[in-house]
Image 1 (cartoon, rainbow, N blue to C red):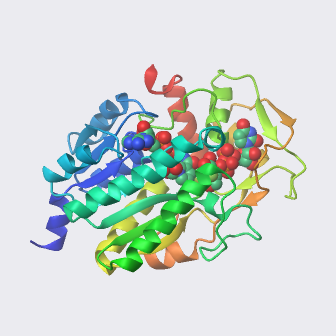
Image 2 (cartoon, rainbow, N blue to C red; image 1 turned 180 degrees about the vertical axis):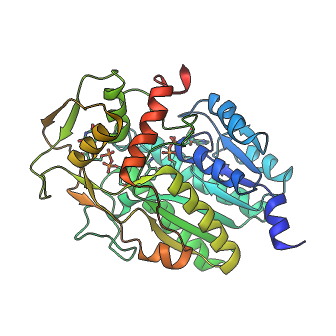
Image 3 (tube, helix red, strand yellow; image 1 turned 135 degrees about the vertical axis):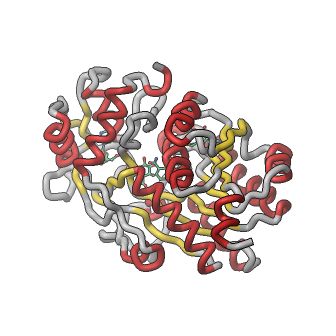
Length: 346
Ligand code: NAD
Ligand code: UFG
């Protein structure tokens, strides 16, 4: 069969496909003509996202409720479909929770990845895109951060990402049939422009953008800005916020790279621009017309002053770069929040 025909007919498996980044990536893949199979145990997501995906993309996807740690469920899944590639988002991601529950984090993130790789091996599917994180750079010695910067872990969540990266490096060295793209995301924010899908954190958001949108919609009284004495231009923490739809497109570019080059890679997915908490708060207010009440509080333990990506390698290898600016990230995050004040549960 012709390669492009194969690509369209053989579905791509997306683990964690009901989650924030997985659901947006599913839309991007379907819009590019792929069929996708979403697998998720719904431990941090809602089945209601599936109706939204149907509204956006029709029936070009299938959903299987399963846990990636369940090898038998994965075997059944691979047995009944000819999967071309896997994008592995499934995992737990709250840094603070990982400190309190390291066993659970290693079980889902490391155990889940091993279980998935074993099932892929049994099925003869050896093409994988893996969700890593800029957290593997720890407290970086300098910014922007290239992929060659030293790797370290400062909490159990970060350690699970590092262990999975190490495992994937060993695997690709041991067996050249494996093609793996390790994607290190910086700070994903925003939502699909329709406002139908977005980030729906349960409980008090840990991350800045969902906290800001919840203040704007009146669910929280004020944002706590963690530290105004960082060694940054305005004293607040600096990060590389990237629109989730740009991130989703980065996954498509990585899949194409694996198919084309038949070899593995590790790349940063960020914009290459550092933005401070204060800048983000000000931009959000300007773009949406909603000023964000805030107060300055002590630094959050474990935070770093500044973290942004060197994006040279992604541009060179994937021909990919982020396109949406900070204003667009705020606009889309706000549309999602305003249309869905209670996330998917409304
Ligand atoms: P998310 O929680 O919205 O999505 C993860 C999905 O995985 C959820 O739907 C959850 O129900 C599912 N899941 C968890 N454990 C599972 C298991 N054992 N079996 C099956 N499904 C399971 O998170 P997200 O923001 O979409 O993140 C996706 C991936 O990207 C994660 O691996 C995360 O660590 C990584 N990442 C996220 C960020 C971020 O800031 N959002 C940054 C860097 C890396
Ligand atoms: N911040 C606040 N108030 C809040 C939340 C955040 O001031 O209520 C500040 C933080 O101190 C930081 C910035 O906003 O300066 C961004 O914080 P986030 O929690 O949104 O993002 P982090 O960069 O701390 O963490 C994210 C992911 C982690 C991942 C890390 C590195 O949430 O999972 O990036 O990739 F490990």
